[in-house]
Structures are given as C-alpha cells and as structure tokens.
Amino acid sequence: MTPSPNVERVPNATGGPLLLEVTGVHKRFGGVLALRGVSLGIRAGEVHALVGENGAGKSTLINILAGAVRRDAGRVVFAGREVDLHSPAQSQAAGIAVIHQELAVLPTLSVAENLFMGRMPARAGWLERRAMRAASRDLLAQVNLDVDPRVTISDLSLSQQQLVEIARALSAGARLLIMDEPSSSLTDHETRRLLELVRQLRTKGVAILYVSHRMAEVFAVADRITVYRDGAYVDTLETAATTAEAVVGSMVGRALVAGLPNEHRHPTETILELRELRRRADARSGAYVALDGVSLTVRRGEIVGLAGLVGAGRSEVARAVFGADPVDSGEILLDGHQVRFRTPADAIRMSVAMVPEDRKALALFLEKPVRWNVTMVRLPALARAGVVRRARERALVLEQVERLRIRAPSVETPVRALSGGNQQKTVLARWLITRPKVLILDEPTHGVDVGAKAEIYALIRALARDGVGILLISSELPEVLELSDRIVVMRAGRVAATLDRSEADERLVMLHATGASV
Image (cartoon, rainbow, N blue to C red; front, side, top):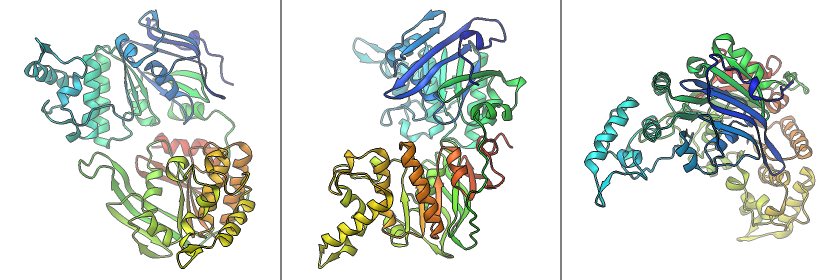
C-alpha cells in the first residue's frame, strides 16, 4: 500500500533542518494525474537519490522545482521559506539549479561565455574578457576540469560540457543541485569522475538531488533514497540500511507479473542475428558509446523483448537494424547472410520493418489520409505505367482496416483526426502489407487506450504464429513479460542478461537493468 504522504514520513536522520521540504504536491496534465501528493526532504550537504520506474513522476517534480511547471497543490519550502517557483529564473535566484539530461549549453560560444551567460563582467559598456577568463579558470578548477576557457564549448566532450554546466550552477550560488540521469551519456570512466565530484560537492555543503535508474551509482553516492511509484511517494530509505533488491521492490510495488508462457511457441530457425554491434553516438568527439558489443538473435516466429531503462540503448539497437543509424563495427545477419543496411529503404527491400517510438514525428503524415499513410511504401508496386491503380490500392487498404479494426469515418480521413490507438494501427497496417520477415516494434502501445492495446497484443501474437520474427521494445515491464518468448535486458549500451520467459519476472529484469544484480 502506498502511504499517504506527509512531511513526517520523510525521515531526517540527523535531526537537522531540511534545505528542501516538499509536502503533498499534486500535478495534473489534462486527464493524467502525474503527481499524487508527493513528499521529499533534502538536507544541506546531502546526496539524496530519487528513484522510480519510467512514469513514476520524477521528471514532473524536477520541472516543478526548476520553475518550468506550476504545481496544482502542495507546499515547497526552500531554506526555511515557502516558495512558489513560477519560472526557471526564479528557481535559479532561489539557489536551485538543474543539470538536465539534455544539456543547456550554447554550442557556438566559448566555455567562458557559457559560464557567464547573462552576467558577463563589463566596465563602461566594454566586456572584460581577461577578468572573465580568470574567473572561469577558478570555476573550472572547482569541478576538476582543465580546459582553456576560450575553447568553443562544442569542441568539448559531453562529460566536459556537463562539468561546465555544474560550474555555472555553482558560480550562481546554487545550494541545491538537481542532476537528472547525469551519467546516461557518459562512459564508465567519465561516470566515475562525476561520482567523485558529487562526493566533493557534498563535503562543501551543496545538497544534491541525484535522479537515476542506475542502482550501482545510487548506492555509491547517496545518503538517502526516496522512491516514487505511479506518481506517488512510497518511502525514504537510509542507503546504509537497505539493499538494491529492496529499493527495486519498492519501485515495482505491484504484484509481480511472472513471465509464464500463454502460447507454446518453440521456434528454432534464426532469422535475425546481431554480432558485436558497436556505435559511438558522436563519432567526431567519441562522446559516448551508444552500442557496446550488442549480440542477440531473433528466431522465426519468436517475440524477443528488449527491456531496459531510459538510455540503455534499446532504440539504438532498433535504429541500427533498420538502417536508420550506422554502426562502427559488428555484423547483422538476415536468414544467415550478412547484410548492410545503409538506409531504411535498404531494410524495407529485405523485408525488415519498424514501427518507431514517436509515431507522429517519425511514422505518420498527419494531414494525409489513412489510405495514403497505409500504402505509401507500396505505391510503386500498385502502379502501372507510373499511374497508381486506385481500385487495387483501396481494396488493399480496406483489407487492413478490417483486419486491424481501424476505426475511421473513411479511408480518406486525415490521420490527424484518428485516436492514438487507430493512428498506431495505421502504422502497423503500412508494414503488414509489405509482409515483413522481421518486425521491430518500439513502444508499440505507447499512448493507446486499453482496448486498442489488447487488439495490438493479439495482432503481435498472430504475426508470431505466422512466422514473423519480432523484436519488441517496451518500457512497460508487464507488456514485455506478457508478450515475449525471451527477454534481452540492456544496460549502458550492452546486453546485461538474456532471460527465458519462464524464468523472468519484473524484479529480476529490474535487477539486471539497474545493475543491482552485479
């Protein structure tokens, strides 16, 4: 049971005053209640971890503390004074700084200019560049970064840019530093350096809210851990008095969904094989490794689930297989033959299809009709002498509309007018008419209602029965466990574990995904 939140439920082990005190904060976005009376307490000079599954409410709370989102109810007390943070500038002026997962640097400006943006030293209207560079060196030394302040910031690695952001926050007098998935784009070596800096900042009295999915990092630096689940406060734990398994159990919370098979498929013939795929996300700077030796197989008629947390590399695997991203090394085999897809068109010609995570941005043409969105990849085959045979096209679309139960007034209705579930079915229909050998599904039920989700589940199972090899990516662990024959768990661009459906449950998957099993 989720406890009703109140400030007394947030332990304060030392008995000292809290720097930040969040009590009973609610936030609703339309019909979605993102935060349900959450609490949080952080002391000065404390590293406090905030953990929870995707959708637990962590990002919403960060945005409230950053002044980017207004809370609907509840109290936020900072440094002994109740505050209503209605803009990022007000949050920063209060002494709160956020280092977002997506860094907020200005790439064409120098390191010094980024450090002092909006408050550059000047005299009589002239910028004092020498003084700014000297001050920059002092600030960079505080975060153990030895670079020339005159260097353009885009020439730095991601970890160096992150340190510049931390230095900027400290220079503005930040008393609370919020780090949102700070190691998601860093190498192991860079992550170790970051954690050491976090420890140093703690000794200087800076409070740090460390938001991360990675249990090893949480237990390496955090004094206390607060768990959110489904937008609600669950518990605050002393790190020294708990275990990674206990924290993961609090994160998952609900009755564990066992991965028992509900269909008896025993595929044996490998249709897709990945061998040691490697890719750096930024080949120029070598900023971080997106794929680090990924190997896996998908058999004909098998559903292989890719599980993992944000930044684990699941979508990067999908894009590499589909030819949307290049790989630096490794092999992709289709039906036992090595292939190299330079573009998605190459993959489509070889009967590989992909439903991307963001259907509106990457898959749909919202102003075009259902008919066009379904048949766009087959128009050349539907044409004679360069003219599309409309009767054949319409018959093909109507067949898919009936098969997938796409609810639309007409096949000429613009896709924008359809519900999320019917938009997703339209994308699926497009690829089904290509009769794929391999189908990659990245978050296939994201943003669809319960009824549409059940229909999509049934379709996925039917495709597997027909012999299609399916690579399924989902952030919903119950979905992965319900549909998959095998589950490949990813962490930091690597395969952390491969689990048979009969042995997997939510707890075991999360232990591998967070590194708590190591």
